[in-house]
Length: 230
Ligand code: SAM
Image (cartoon, rainbow, N blue to C red; front, side, top):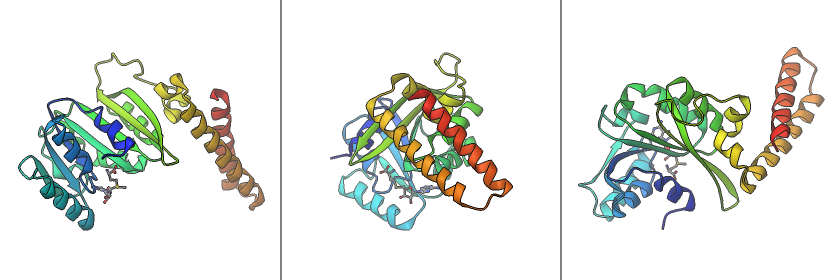
C-alpha cells in the first residue's frame, strides 16, 4: 500500500502516459502507477547506489522489468529528450527539486506535466516554474503521520492557468493553497510563523552586525507576510 502522500502524487499522473520518477528510492510510485494501469511505462531514476538497488529489487519483485526501466544517474540525466510525458520528483527539498529541473532543462522537451512534492521550500520551485514558462495548474497540501506535504502540478504554459505570475504571498505560500486556505495550510503557516519568531529572538541575542540586521529584517518581513494571510 502506498503512502497517502505518494497516492496523491499518483492521482495527478496523466492516464496512459509514460512517466519518469526521479529520486525513486524503492520505486513504489512507478510500480503502483504501472500495476494500477495509470501509466503505460516508467523510468525510475536514482543517483545513490543503495536506493537504486532497492528500486531494481522492487521492480523485479513486481515482475515489471519490461515496463519499468530502473536507471542510475543524477536527476534528469537518466532520461532522453522526448522519452516521457510526465515527471514526478517527490520527497526532497524544494531547492534540490529546482536544481534537478534546472540542470536538466533540455530533457524537458515533450514533457507535458511535472508533479513535484517538496518537503520544504516549495517557493523555490514556484519561482523556477514562472521563470521557465511552466504554469502551476494545481496545488495540494496534506498531512500524514504528523508531517505536512505540498504537491505542485505544472504544465507547459499556454497562458490559461489562473496564476501565470503571482505576487509575493502566492510565491511563498502557493496561490491555490492560499485561495483554499485549508486547516492543514493554516496549521503549517502558524507553525512556520512560530519558527520564524524563534529565529528572530535568537538573532536579537546575537551580535548586532549589519548582516544580522539584514537577516532580522528578512525574518520580520516573512512574518508580516504570513500574518497578512492567516
Ligand atoms: N521519491 C521517493 C518518495 O517520495 O518517497 C523517495 C524520496 S527519498 C527521501 C529521496 C531520494 O532521492 C533518495 O533516494 C535520493 O537518493 C534521491 N536523490 C537525491 N538527489 C537526487 C538526484 N539528484 N538525482 C536522483 N535521485 C536523487
